[in-house]
Structure formats: C-alpha cells, structure tokens
Length: 325
View 1: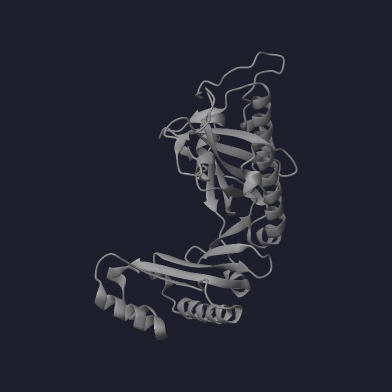
View 2: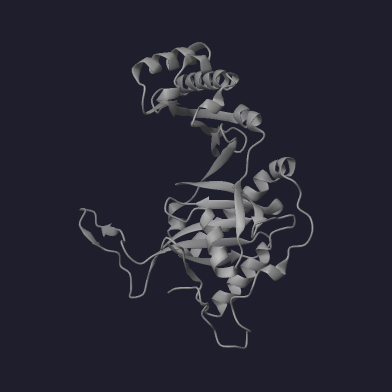
C-alpha cells in the first residue's frame, strides 16, 4: 500500500515571521501530559469537522497524530457476499481517520497522510483552537528540480490548460502540432494530456517509452511558456532512493510515496510506531536537501507561547472550554 509524504514549512506563528525553531517538543509534551491527565483534546472547527491530536513521539523527532473524528455518516462493513452491516462500534466509539506530522529541523513539517485523514492546514486550525497558536504553513519547494528529473525513471507526464489558451505558439516541435490541432477541436473547457508507460510490454519496451516521455518533458520545459498551463506534473521512481515521486513542474514541489504495510496501519497498536519510523527515515533521506535549500533556523524555541492543557499534576483532570466530546 502506498502513502504520500508531503513537506511543509512553518513560516509564521500567530502572523509573525518565525525566526526561531517552532516549539514542537513543547507542543508534544503538552499533548502527552493532557492525555495522561484525561483532558478532553477534541476541537470542533468552524465547518463542523472534529479533530483530536496526540503525541506519538516527543524526541528526537516530535511526531503528532491528528485524527478526524467521525460519529455519523459512517461507512458500512460488507461480508464476502457483499451483505452490509454497521461498523461494530461500541457505544461512545468514533471513527478516527489519521494523519501523522513530524517536526523536523529548519521548521520543516513532514506529513504522512492517507486518503481520509486531515490535510496539513487542519493542524493550524487545531493548534489555533486548542493552544492559541496559529502556525502559517507553506509547501517546501524543490529548487533542485533538474536533479530530480535526471534521477526520475519517469512513468507519467500530464498537463492541462484552458481551451481558450490553446495555441502552438507556446511550444515547439511535436507539442506545437498537438496544441494547434487541439485549438481547432475545442474552444471551451479544459484540455488535458496524459502520457504514461502503461502496464503492457517487456522491460525494454517500457524503457523505450520512458525515454520518449523524458524527451517530451525536456522539450516541454524548454518552451519557456510553462506558466501558461494550469497543471504540469511528472511522476516516476527516484533511481537513487527508490521512492515514487510526483514533481509539480509549476510549483517545483514534490511528494514522496512510501510503501506501508496495510496490516500494520490497520492495527492502532502498531500504526503510530510504524509512522514514526517512516517519518524519521524521511527526515534522514532529505536532510541534505533541506540543508542546501532552506535557511538554518537558530536560537531557542519560545516555550512560553504553548500553554498547558492539563492542570497541575496534583489537581483533578479538567476539560478545556473550547473542546467537544
């Protein structure tokens, strides 16, 4: 099973530029302490989405779990014959759909997501509602896109643009012919092209197709008119790391894909530990890149901006005023 790892950077905190390390360890400690003291950590967003966070690791890499909590409109369970029955939830149980966040050096946030878990910006909503923090998240941009494409055993190339902007003058060679022909076929809507290696053919044939697609990508990028397009993506496997990557050629950002054991991620007792290991490996694999492309963040995290959720350890557990069960 594949899951994606996205990289974001905490650029602001409560609207101010963040020049010191984000106090991630303090956030993890506060969440862990709140869990140990039975503090309700649920938070309802403005659109009604309910979120719940917990610390999976405090050090050396702080890792948080953020769950989207579902108590209604739940999916069904089906047996081998397709007969449906309700999810076997006990009274008070909720469905948790999880995203994992690791806080790396240089205020980088690695996000291991699944199809239904909260997206990265939800973390900012949760921290704002529960802790009074408002981290501003921006995607990490790949400035070494040339190196990435050189290492990429490409399997798919895709682009799109509005039909009203279809014109061969943006391109050269084969692409000019394609766009000119398309401009005569449609004047409204969106024109999309997707080239892929496909599943048929032997290894030699697939390598030939990869080479052809790689050449077409190079011709496309040499055009100098890439900004005219709405969507330009190359996908393939990194020949060095072995990870599958999707490179957004407009934003020059990437997404790493990792193989995960579906059995482990369906087991709550093992999923968090596995996610922590995956994110730690991602931190190691990309540390050199971050060191080359992102500014070093010095200084000491301001721990005082992160309030405690739990009362004094000797006091009775309390429930935060903004939370919901």
